[in-house]
Image (tube, rainbow, N blue to C red; front, top):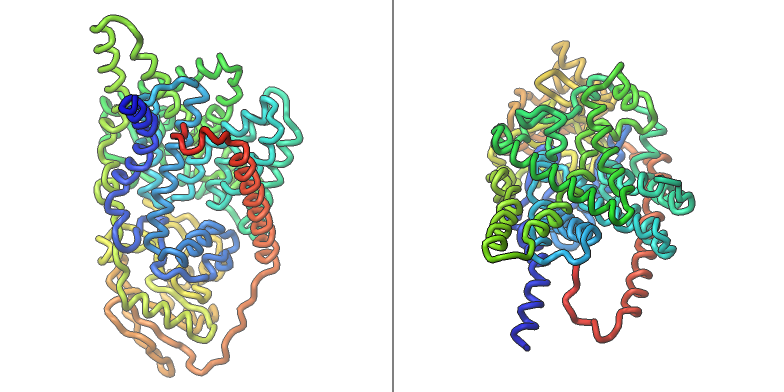
Length: 583
């Protein structure tokens, strides 16, 4: 009896354990000592409240409140562990959510089928491409989608208590900024709207979303920075398989940046096999939802795919018009992320699919069905092996050089004056980071206003940035003006020149009257006007109002979640405490 009970507990715990361990295999060297720097994942090794972290450095802040979350956690456990915990945590959250949704599709889902769901949720092209580009916030949005679908359905079937919890969950999803909040709203909105609107919970969700978006939405709406049609086209989905853009999207890929595309997705065989399993899983999920009278849960996946395809086709410039002309439309510019609900539904459907393959019957039928179910469950890994171990080492934690950190600390403690950053490009290939592409670390390390290039260089050209001062410097440099002269015209007092980087730093000769504050292997720091009076830092009213909205919304959401958790603990029967919990 004891052995049987222990075996049952082990089987029930298997999906939990796999959900905790599989992300470790995916991340691998990314969890080592130091921080991972990859494209948009520029993580300061020293948690510091910089203007970038607070959204004060650009008209349309995109790193809030997500950078603030990383800094808060970094002050508790350190910058590197904070980053590792967030990367691992979002993948665990995705696994738990997908299994939770799959148990809605089939209440008696076997433990081994739940393990297949974990694999599909963690091991797919969407996760790989977003990890490579460093967008943990988009992965956070992906991870919360299944949880929100389950909560939204509870509200629709009449669980009145679920409305407050749904609002709180949407608000907490917004800690990742626009990326995660867009996916949260995409998951919840259609479920509450169809077939007839549930106005009260819908209004609550809208209020929660608007409140948590305050830190980035209010400054952006007040500044109204121009949005470029070039950007809308540049960020449209791209095929990462020979099957074309639309089928690449259905299979969970299609990210706009080809540098993130895994090599094996170029194989017709591997891409085709992966697509077949995705389509079968989606069909299985749809049939299960039809039996539950829950077809409305298909709406987020269908809408997300439709919008992504619209971005590809852009008929009569419709999508470009939405992105560039509609207030707030810029958050949809990267349309590939909108397939997240589709990827989630496919992952959850895998469990029901493989469970159906192992049907009772003779020994031969059981063996054959079990073998087929095992193969289907492993298809995500077999068709995408490069995701393992930090995407084949592309995600590896590194130590930021001590002299660069010291230069950032020096400037952070210096009198306020603004810092010009060279080389004039927002992306770097640091020699000490294996020459991998990443954003410059300096704006996130220095507690000063940093004037840096915010245009996006692409093979097809440059997507204009939003900072008018940066644009003026860029035009001056293109006209042959000396970099120090161009930066000084914009009122900066200090200049930091990063070394051992590509593109290479320009040869900078300290001008007469300037002072060299640091001259090391990785950084040259100049004070162009020693002894000048400090410039007073001004915080825009829009930022203050926006942050107040975000903070109040998150505090209210955390209060609701805490109260819900306490009530749930009180209702939990004493005899069930300590038992293994099902996802």
